[in-house]
Length: 212
Image 1 (cartoon, rainbow, N blue to C red):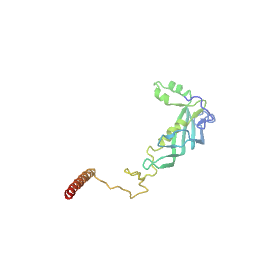
Image 2: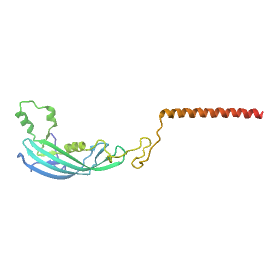
Image 3: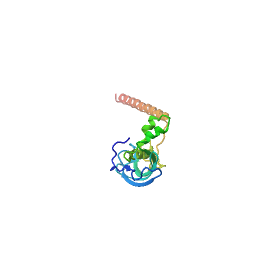
Image 4: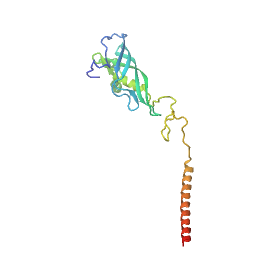
């Protein structure tokens, strides 16, 4: 269970007004500042402090409060093809159940089957009628973001040989050379250089004889 939730935190919500009568509904809109590391580290994410718009629907159910919502924000990153900065709008949907503190005990009493401890650890609880949306929102945003962001779907990327941006140089190319021919050309050049040196030495010998 979360400890000591602060109602002043913009991502902490109070459900007292909603009440505990099953079927009660409450709709909320709120704009909050993005917390740190709100995205995929080193790839793309919501910049620290930038606005995140939230549309929430709170529904009281038997064992807690079901929270359904949508988050909208601008994200920034780097195109994986051309390495240029990119910025776009992102939207993430989420739904999470926040259980009453006594819901776990009631669930155990209603069933004869043992409760999986792993499932128990994954449960999120209300604390004095408050719930913290940040971990739910963070997971939803990360899942909504691309692991391989591109500035455009048809981005041509960079030349693998020299790094030129191909979208700005559509006619850019390098003459392809078969590495086997390149090796032969290098060998031919070495032979030619050797022949020139030999010829130079022979000519020097002839000159010396003529001088004598």
